[in-house]
Image (tube, rainbow, N blue to C red; front, side, top):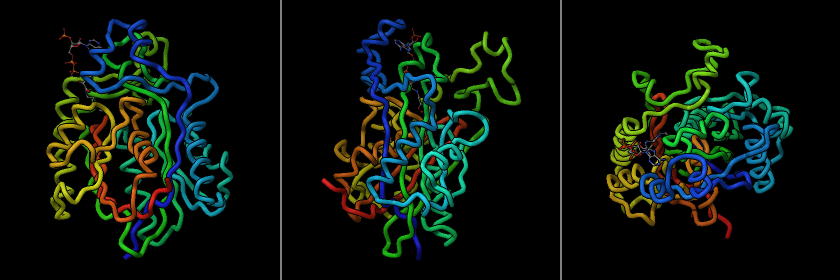
Length: 331
Ligand code: UT7
């Protein structure tokens, strides 16, 4: 059976750091509150006004190309998960296609907020498993600083900018994406959303005055759903694949809140050394969190490692994936 395996990872993070100490000067908050409630110490911010999500996604794709020796002309498709596209259309995937010279590829953006990478991975894997494509690039990229209200202490402490990309290729040896589950529930759409700018509330002076072009989150409520959704998804996928905590090498969780991640790990019966965690350094980069973890841990991964990916986000959207890692990371 043909599986879709990740065969390379690339990433990009802006240089500039926004620390908790910086935020203490901007809103009524404290380093202590942020660390204990979220686990975040700093995030990366792409300050340049003329550089948007496509810039970070392109840099991530270029790093993947450089590391893997991939010829961009061989790429069949680019799936880019984001809620901060450069513009509504053309899709940011098209801008990346042009910038990297993927002259045979098609591509599109996928909007599933914090579950974006997971959904894009599953979609890309289907293109490989069906035999239609040999090389699919899946990117998670978000410039969250452009939709964050830096006067709102309940959200501005959470988010950062970043991008990461993976290459999917066919594998006949049992490595790759072995299972995935995806869910959404639009009934809770108001708890985590950005309501301005679309066809419901096209941009006007009023939408700007009412701050409708910023992300809005009812944190406490989202927290409750997220703890349950992410832990359930991870536990379900383990159960239906007969995996115990001992079988799992790493949990690769969406990085929204350390407490949500801890609850998921507890439910899976795994200890903290088996959890990929970089929320402390990057905050919540939405679609980029999971592939950024893979990039950070790539050198430690070994062929055959069992990984459980899990995410929860706006929509609501959530899900989990079971991956058998396909290659030994280089030291
Ligand atoms: O990635 C997509 C999915 N998103 C998530 O999974 C995020 C889920 N939610 C969360 O991670 C947490 O709810 C937050 C980190 C957003 C907030 O933490 P919390 O423990 O749920 O705090 P809270 O909203 O219940 O607020 C507790 C108190 C409030 O004050 P009162 O009403 O008790 O007096 C807030 O006003 O903390 C206050 N507060 C702050 N204080 C200092 C809220 N934000 C801040 C802040 N600094 N930045």
